[in-house]
Image 1 (cartoon, rainbow, N blue to C red):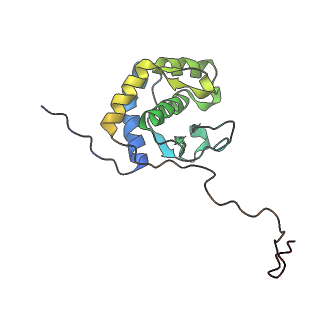
Image 2: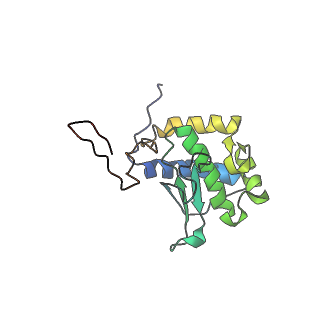
Image 3: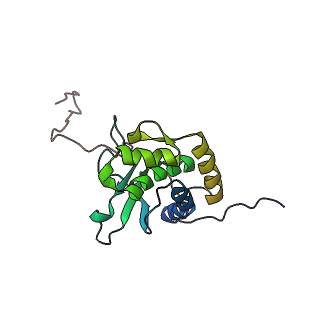
Length: 174
């Protein structure tokens, strides 16, 4: 019996929502069950979205910040590689599961480690076992329907009001 290709998901949000559904059992098994409702989308974080030194790849807004009392997770549009997107999604979903008020302190660390994240808690990476799981999940989800954005590729605006004038006759410049 041959393996079938995954059905294509048309939108980034649909892809991320499907990923959350597939991740729910792992969160429950790890002792950090997700809230019943979590909204996921692609968007720039409120801080550190394109800095040269520090770039946030995801952000979770606590349910208390939302009018409908649902946690909101955003994945940076700078990402397009499915396994990396899923690893960031897991990190942000841990925030949604335990509550954003804990930041990256002990309750977050317990949940993150239980889910298979490693490294500095402010910038976790998927451990070996989680990477295997996320790679299989990415294969099942298909290509992430998003083309990454590259900051700094737009024309820069003029920052001064000075004009450059040259004389056609003598090439005088001012």
